[in-house]
Each structure stands twice: as structure tokens, then as C-alpha cells.
Amino acid sequence: MRYAGISNYSGWQTAAAVAWQRAWPGRTRLASTQVEYSLLARSIEAEVLPAAAYGGLGVLAWSPLGRGVLTGKYRDAVPPGSRATTTRAGFVREYFTDRCARITSAVVTAARDLGVTPGAVALTWVRDRPGITAPVVGARTAGQLAESLAAEQLVLPSDVRVTLDDVSAPT
Image (cartoon, rainbow, N blue to C red; front, side):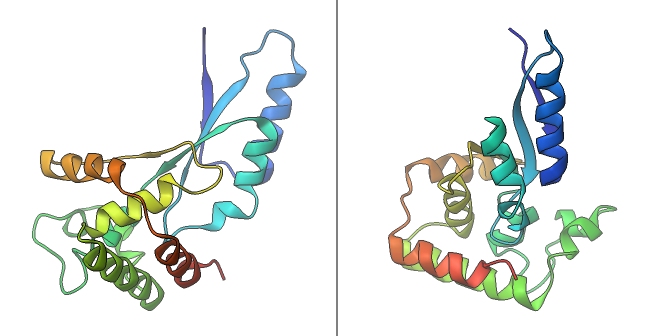
């Protein structure tokens, strides 16, 4: 059996790709779409998630930790050796805004109150969102992987989910 997927398509592109694959007999149907999704990047909720649901696609959320920002490691300074110190610094620094700082602060507070890491809170929030099949974990170290795997057991209380939904709501 073959599986095909798409990545980083907009809502209309997702719907068009699904229709195109279905229009030709014998073509492999699309199984999934992979898109950036986190508390800092929720724009897919407007069109991509509905298009994926329409097409029966699984949604794989890449960068569920907001490019590492939601771990809280960038709150006070840029740590040496982090992605924000490399040639890909712009990829991370795009989320060094006041809005993202407010969201990260809410994640850090929730993590402290729950006795877990901020990364676990952010990852769990994505994992449990309607329409999301699975978050894509991009751990660079064994410690990061262990933290991500530990989030599997976490259940966010409803008041925490509501707070995070509210503070990160798309504008």
C-alpha cells in the first residue's frame, strides 16, 4: 500500500490537492498534511483544518513547541548553542514578539502549577487539539526527546486548556 501526503499547503491548496487526486482513477489518495501548528501559530484553524477534515486527511503538526520558544528557554536570553544562534536564527526570532512572550509566560505558569515542563504543556495542548492526528517532535538531543515522550502521560485540566486557548487565540 502507498501513502501520499502534502506539506505546508494553504486551505484551498489542500482541498484542491484532495480533489485532484480523487479525480483521476488509480491515483494514490492523500493520507495526510503536515503543517506548522502550536500555541504561537494557529492560523491553520481557519482553513487548513477544515480542508483536511473534508479530505479525510490526517494532520501532522510540525514545530508544536513554537520553534522551541514555548519551552521557555528564550525568555531571558538566547542560550549559547541554541537554534537562535545559528544561521537559522530568523526562523526562531520570528517568535520573539510581545504576543509570543505572553503566550510563553502562560505556558510556563501552567507548567509550574502542574509540576511539568513548559514543553510538555505546549506539546500536550497540540496533541489534544481537534483535527490534529499527531505532533511531529523535532528533538535535537536525547533530553529533549525524553521530555517530549514524557508529555504522553499528561492531561491538561480544562481551566488550563481554556486559558491557553484564550491567550493564544488567533487575531
